[in-house]
Length: 236
Image (cartoon, rainbow, N blue to C red; front, top):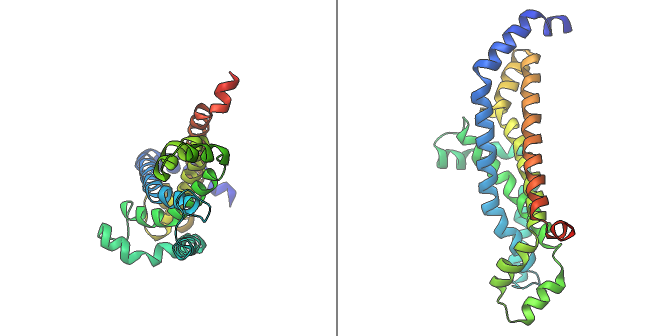
């Protein structure tokens, strides 16, 4: 079996597929991951801020009922497995994109699956902010909006960048899974060739490229988080 998988014919065929199909698939995976992450941050960042600022002792207390509803919605969306969620949001995907298959269509379920996750990551980052800094801003008469925009978010930038890196690598893995229902990218190639046609060498190439993308995103995120960390700057 392994002789056939790694034979010269299989290797030559895999290299041909690598040349012809992988560049487009790599680009599709990249732009879907980046776009989905951007939309997830746009939705998840305000929610994460509300989860912290809207608490009883927060800078912008909200009614308990609203906070409970927010937490329930976020927890509910996070608890649904991604493959099931992709199927559940078919009507919404069709309404927005016009179809449920293809690379652009995979962005909708990716955003819905990831923005609750981003909201929790933002919540975690904001909770790391020193309460004394917030109290000092309040004592100087800063409004809740000013505290959020000029104190809480700037103080948590390194943590936010680190968590954004976690988010983008998670969304990358989700994008590969979307190939099961017709999404494009490296996931589609891995499933079509590795699962349906038993061309495991092609699947190995797809996995290697996914690993390279993860390492790329992780390296960029780590460098940005390090550069934005005031504590590290003060030690230099």
